[in-house]
Image 1: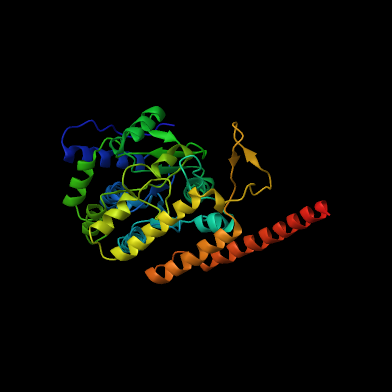
Image 2 (image 1 turned 60 degrees about the vertical axis):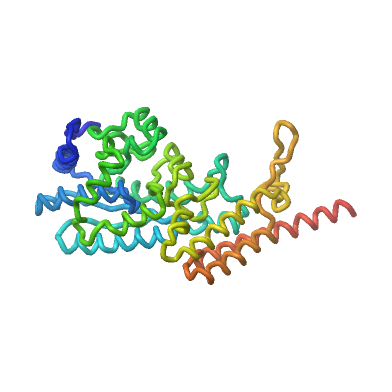
Length: 385
């Protein structure tokens, strides 16, 4: 599907930003009235994207009420405490400012279903913390919750436009992905899995310096400044884990570059953004260090096969082609130990690291696992007898 989106391809930064706004304006005033869903993580790219969208809408009031604009963020429930605080604070300001300025802007935060969260998966079911080969977290905690919202909006309006801050200059992998899928700043691409949803990446041709320069030269139209965002990046030396929208984008999480993301992420060898905050003496650095220590402890638990069952959750054993054992989930006593230590950590940091509803779900899974374990032992005893 093609909409009248103008190409950029101009030299100076002001001209490139002007061309992006022209592209946004052209799409907004296209003949259809599909709602705009703006992917927002609170990082530099999504912040600039939302700022330019806001500027376009504000320039065209009251005609900017033609479409519903929904700012979509995702909370995995294990985000870095500093980052999730920044995200939620900024969304609160954005929602209030939008209403105050007469803009039709809604704010939505997606979360994983309570039985699919990180802690219910690890402590409840005994899933080992994610690895590069077993990256179970992204689909459950990011893709599914966000896609449920997008699907619901798209069904209700027979179509939608998803605006993302994706840029080629983010990484070589991102550039290859965008080129393979034909994503550019001047065309809309169909969503990988959601029918009648089109993706629009108007910032595609900007580089890091372009983004930072624009943010430093412009105040956010919702009020305040970008100073807090800039300071957060400077201290951590990281980039945000973006709103992941499909399994093809899963590599955005747990990449080797320093990114803000889940403080529990064990896909990376070292959480360089969190470590950067500690090294920079960021306010609350001791709390951040405690989170890092817990994460390292989780990795050590994962690497010790003695902590894991010899069968999977379905009760079947699995072996590799060389005959070696493929170990299953954490043993129940190990899961209980993780919960105890996590609750102690929660008291030390003062941050809510696990929800009461998650604990209830975990204990329900444990109860069922204990029943299954008792039944298995009784069966083994009866066979021996």
